[in-house]
Image 1 (cartoon, helix red, strand yellow):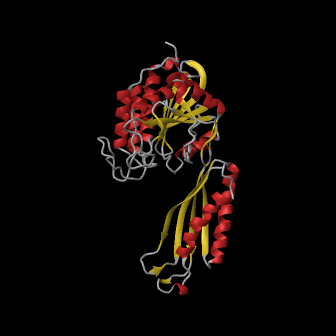
Image 2 (spheres, one colour; image 1 turned 90 degrees about the vertical axis):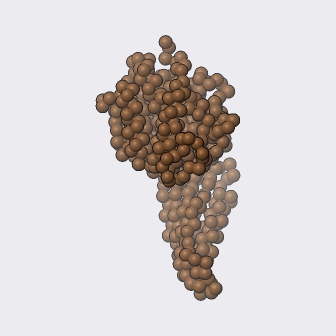
Image 3 (cartoon, one colour; image 1 turned 135 degrees about the vertical axis):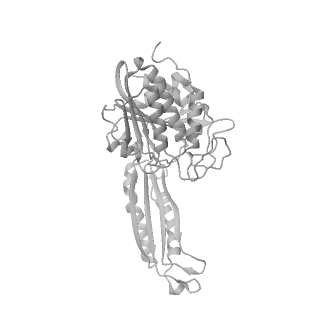
Length: 390
């Protein structure tokens, strides 16, 4: 049997894995049950102490399969963490853990990679080089990939290339989205505390109102995007939290804003703190307010390597047909912590469509998020195909 022949898709196994994980979500760096489940399954496939690294960055797992043919060391990655939210979808496999939900498809990622590990272990003599199966914690904002990188995820063996997928409700089942160069945006955070002088709501002349100033800043910061940066450059400045006051008739002492900044351009990214503080300082001076502005550099831009992307395109064309491959222009400015890994190793990150006739229409991070589970089979064929293509 040739290594690139299509392997039968184990749909029952994929669905069972995904539904079990969906019902038992765990938050970032708390994926203890998930990691234990993954380790048990890997050991049942034949992975042993010599081929397993557990507790990498607290809950991460690396499983190495050494193939029977010469070839590169390829890493296949799946993120494991859920989001801190309640599920409202009425499905038999809905979350059993209040305050946690797999609303971003990571349950499907783990299911796909587990099934791929089992299939490839059964055909290890045909595998070119070595495959490192990476089950990663804490993608949702806590940079689990960076933590694993700091603990040597790309060494022993040294990884030559890395592939990651993400289930995506913006594409139909059977479609694979990929793009060379900048694919996902940088994702940075800021906090801003505005301090004034509190007092009675009926006598604002005796106060310095931080709410009025902070409210104006929410709009003023948008002028960076609309009036300072070319419309052809995707940039987002989002204030996601505005916290101030205690009751209806008291002007408070302070207001706090929390937000995110995202872009696909490294130079624009580097310029954003100074642009923002110029506006903040000017407006606060004009309104007699004091401020504290903190800018936190987060995930860098995820840059896809063109040659590694070509491998994805070739596998997708073989497994799904030429019409399956698309450039997903409609993807928003997501952030992704595999950006740290792509800075150290050639990488390809691609999307797998989950939108079907009845399920898969809710966007990522929706409390009703679900998928057309046929997408699991597509992801399985992609991961297995990438492993077998040296």
